[in-house]
Image (tube, rainbow, N blue to C red; front, side, top):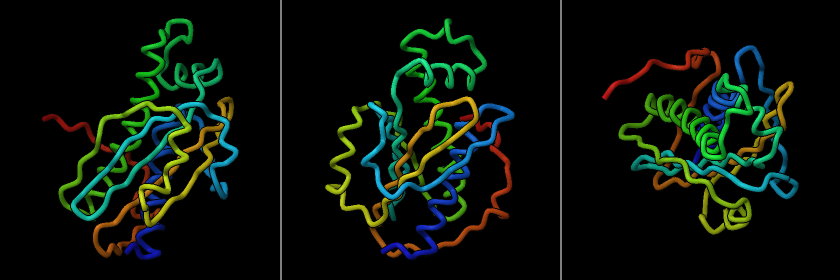
Length: 183
């Protein structure tokens, strides 16, 4: 069972991660919570998982592979959109999701031992219709808005394997995006 404090903590950590990973330098991301995903216009999604012995957290980044999205990820990676091949475009989206979940993984490590994350998987958005089959204890959807970029949607799904209760505040997080770890 997830306490309300744990649900709030997962949401806060994800929104902070989204702000750090999806917004280009000098652009602020505004995050809101739409009530459901029925009107998400995106066609595909990148799925990543952060897991421990106590929970599985899935983050889904919805996107449409169009000119506005290509322009956003080109700007995010400081490259010319014309130089982006289809593969480098998909890699940029997956890497942005990877960066977001890496920040989330690091921050969750302050509360839970033995956390790991998956590699990004790009799948059709229609697969999201089966989210209820995962029997998640907590599902929340987010809309991410930034000046000069299309709106992106993100879903958070948390399955708990034990009682989970932790709390985190925005003041504790700060704005540090972490240090490079070498293995």
